[in-house]
Length: 97
Picture 1 (cartoon, rainbow, N blue to C red):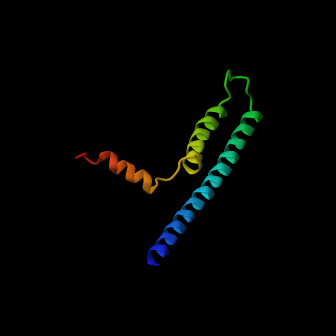
Picture 2: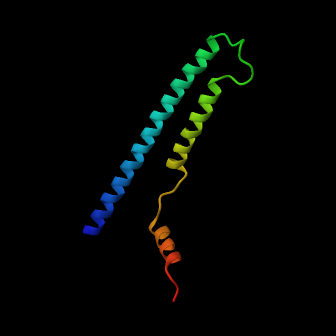
Picture 3: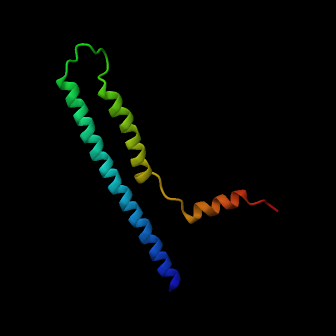
């Protein structure tokens, strides 16, 4: 009974942490879209006759976007470490008799 309660608490803590990570990602995405939208608007409204090649907001959008994608990958694509993963790693490092 106590073990089940501990498991439930642990699952609840993990669920809350995951929800907070997702909420954090939404905040970061909103900031990214707002700031980059403003930068592209400034670029579009200013004199672009002196610049050749790639518009300057491209660099900000690309680099910041890369880090935003890495954050999203961490949340959605990378699975948590399981007990089976831990046991496999322990077994791999355990000396054979």
